[in-house]
Length: 258
Ligand SMILES: NC(=O)c1ccc[n+]([C@@H]2O[C@H](COP(=O)([O-])OP(=O)(O)OC[C@H]3O[C@@H](n4cnc5c(N)ncnc54)[C@H](O)[C@@H]3O)[C@@H](O)[C@H]2O)c1
Image (cartoon, rainbow, N blue to C red; front, side, top):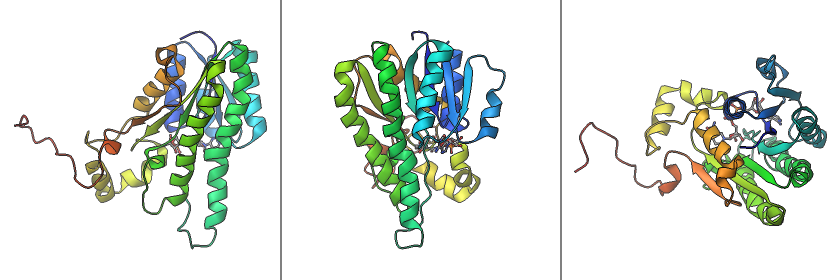
């Protein structure tokens, strides 16, 4: 990985925080962007991290993040557009459409802004990478998460389409599609033993992912190791999307397979 900086949005917790940890361990500077000032305080004193409190759905935040990357670390190497939210009520409930607009602003508009801000700096550096944290929810439907799943599907097709626009500039744009991951966002599901067991049973590998396992694939997509990959969506989901969901994969019972 060359020197320089990576912008990470949604950097204060979960998958974003794991990216900050991994990228700095491997010698890159990180501009850590998050709406949570308190969350960003955890990076205080780390010389390889510059924090920026701001909303990924705000054009200024995206421009400022890229400007900080070049002014503090010399050049932008990659942008990890990871910030994402969910949580809309059922379609007929009050406020549902307003919730869709809020979720769309972060999960889709924020990505467009992130690409728009990063592209000139990456172009100036001779190329680079943009990695989007999408979701398995963008590849399939789920009950009662219509708004989230809709925006994640949009994120995936944005990645594919923008990758085509920018390929000739040597700017690669790819996505990871995480499955169940142990982050603050999923704390409620994990705290409910019955729900947690049901969800875990859907994962062929039989467990949730750690944020670091997502960050490793994001690192790969941001690094020259993936230099011939663009417009790809990589499920990092323990096998969930390999399945139609009709039959459950076997669980390991300690006996070798027959
Ligand atoms: N955790 C999972 O199981 C899972 C599964 C699939 C996809 N994802 C996706 O991974 C990404 C990260 O999820 P996570 O589980 O780490 O989330 P998280 O909620 O645990 O952490 C997200 C961080 O993003 C910040 N954030 C939220 N909105 C923001 C905004 N508008 N601008 C800047 N920062 C903002 C939050 O303050 C928080 O620090 C999201 O895009 C999410 O949709 C997560």
